[in-house]
Length: 242
Image (tube, rainbow, N blue to C red; front, top):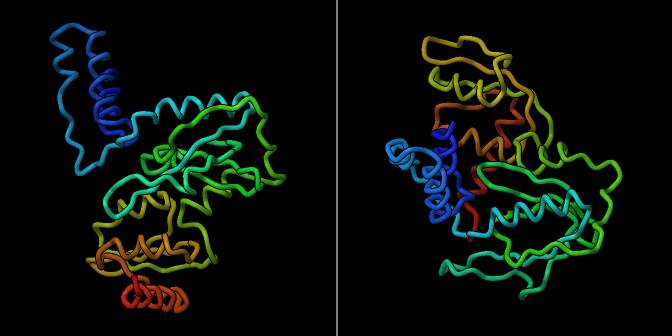
């Protein structure tokens, strides 16, 4: 169990490098010296960027506390400029925010809630600074709001117009297809080197980006609506002005 805990700490993006070492040192102190040295082994995580915000764990706890006690939070939010310098948004103005849920996606924490304008938004916790829990009660969740619907819209490729799509894939992609759509996904052998997938998806940029990411090992063979949409998207990217 401790070995899995150490691996999780080392591989997690939201735990800063220095914090990873501190946590592993503490875990190692719970066992004998020999096992402690084994626990300190270095797990290789291929090209995984670690967070540089040491406040993430503290902020996650504060946000969960605010959710549990029905309180509002304030924070500042930053981006990066071309020199990789942090730039606080809105000239440093504070965000007053009513948190409803935490979402863990792609090794990052997001908080979902709404500001005083009442629009449901999401923010990355690792981009927050100066976060505090207020005494003020948070705004009530909008009627009919479902976090699952918000997640599908914001994070998954299930956002957009529904379409039954046929994909032609190289055999090596079967594992990826099952990972994405489950073992019950409809497939059939196409030829000795390919199989065909028939699946209902939403024609979103995330879906087409996923197809692009296969590097040509997957292509859309129908319907024409899906093929033409992907071709139009590729043209836009090639001709876009930046």
